[in-house]
Length: 228
Ligand code: B1M
Image 1 (cartoon, protein in one colour):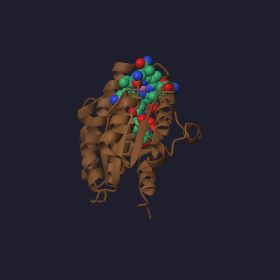
Image 2: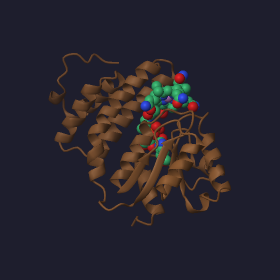
Image 3: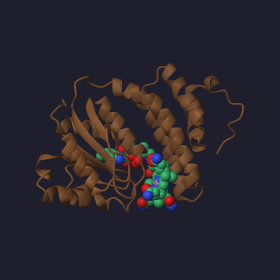
Image 4: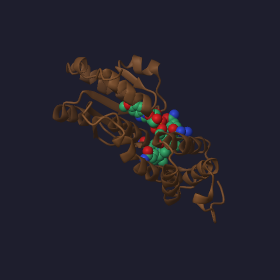
């Protein structure tokens, strides 16, 4: 996307640095994205702002070119790796900014057939920041994984993520089974992911639809009765 050679990140002003970070993320340059994230933190930027303006916005641009056939899976994987580098740096800050006492227990996982995990990881980070104990089941989770985790961890909330129109219906399969087993009445289920909307969440009988990570953490706190 850009000529990244000979650019000294720390010499750039904030706006140019954010633009450069988006380019570096697009080019899958993990070390540079990490360095840019560190520089913005050193300049006093809020971790949430770095996340939204540089990392998530950079990934949005990647998504457009992926859709349009300009970028392919191996390149997008590198972009994802670069994004995760920056997220790794922000994670402890976002988590530490939260309440210390546990707000509740939250089991989260990406559904069967789906290996997208960046958004799910972000939601997990925000939940940790909000004081939740987060049990992350990772990607590609069949019904059995959710059932086992519910049995083992007795969560207050179950969260499912899906990024594909072909995998989002599986959330309905899980919810239906939870209902059949009498679990759903006591376990609020939150669903989220780019192709979802409130209408879909209602149609599959989900308790809550989380549009983005920050809102999802707020919604989770509301479910726990811990939002003022
Ligand atoms: Co994929 N992919 N991908 N991909 N990928 C999308 C989703 C796609 C929209 C790209 C496109 O065409 N524009 C498209 C889906 C089209 C559709 O279904 N209609 C697509 C496709 C087609 C595919 C493959 C089928 C491509 C192929 O192989 N031909 C394949 C499928 C693999 C599979 O899962 N079985 C595939 C593979 C991949 C990679 C492996 C290369 C990589 C994933 C790497 C990884 O996650 N570790 C990848 C990526 C990176 C993307 C895009 C570019 C970016 C996704 C992302 O991380 N966004 C994506 C395009 C896009 O969405 N713009 C795309 C950033 C993230 C912060 O946002 O995940 O939306 P998001 O999460 C948000 C909210 O949605 C919400 O909060 C998050 C933070 O605000 N949220 C929740 C998410 N989960 C939540 C759960 C909640 C609450 C809120 O509660 C529990």
